[in-house]
Image 1: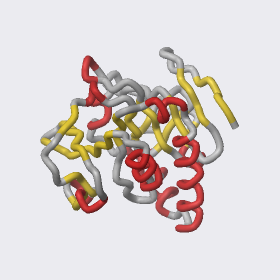
Image 2: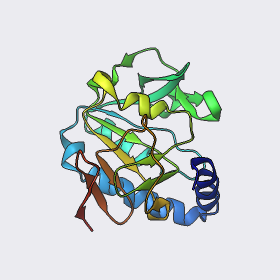
Image 3: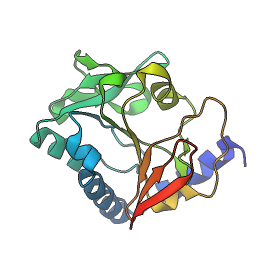
Image 4: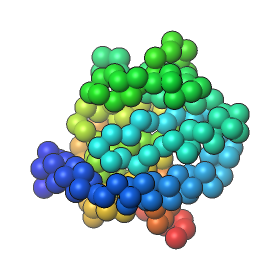
Amino acid sequence: MPKKSLREIMLARRKHLAAEVCLGHSLRVQQRVLALPAFEQAKAVALYSPIFNEVFTEEIFHEALHRGKTVAYPRVRGDQLDFVLVASPQQLSPGAFGVLEPTGSATIPSSALDLVLVPGVAFDLEGNRLGYGKGFYDRVLCGSGRPALSVGLSFESQLVERLPVEDHDQCLDLLITEERDYSFTPSGRCMLEST
C-alpha cells in the first residue's frame, strides 16, 4: 500500500480513539519510558508536542525536569528541526503546522541529545516509522548529527506488519507502546525486550 493511503488510514484510526483510551494508553507508554535505563542515564532529552491523538509526553517532561535533565523540543526551521531548550510549558506556543513549538532561543545540537522521543503515524517491527511526509525526523536521525538514541512512542493500534520504506527513511533504536518495548538491531530486526 502506498505511504499516502496508509497514512490516511492510520490517521483516521488514531483520530477515532476515545479520549480516555488515548489518555490511559499514553500514561502507560510514558511510564515505560520513565523506567528505561536509557532515560535514567540521559542528561539531555528531546520530546515532542503531541497532535491528532499522538502519545502524550507531559509526564515525561515533568519527570525529566524533576530529575535535572536538559529538555528540548523541536522547532521547524525551513526543512530542518532545531531543538530548543524548554523549562516550562509556558515556553511553548503554536508554530509550524499548528504544533506547539518552543519560543526560546537557546538550542542544543541533535548530536548532543542522549535520547530523542519520536512521534509517528504508523510503525512496524523492523524499526521503521511513517511520519507526516515532510522528512523532518529522518533528517535528524541520519549522519553525524544523529542523537545517541531514537525512541518511537506509539499505541499498539499504530503497528503494522511492514511499512513501505524508501532510501531516506531512518530506523528507530526502540519503540515503546502501552504493552511492550521493542528494540531493533542495526539490521532492523525486532528484539522484543519486555511485556
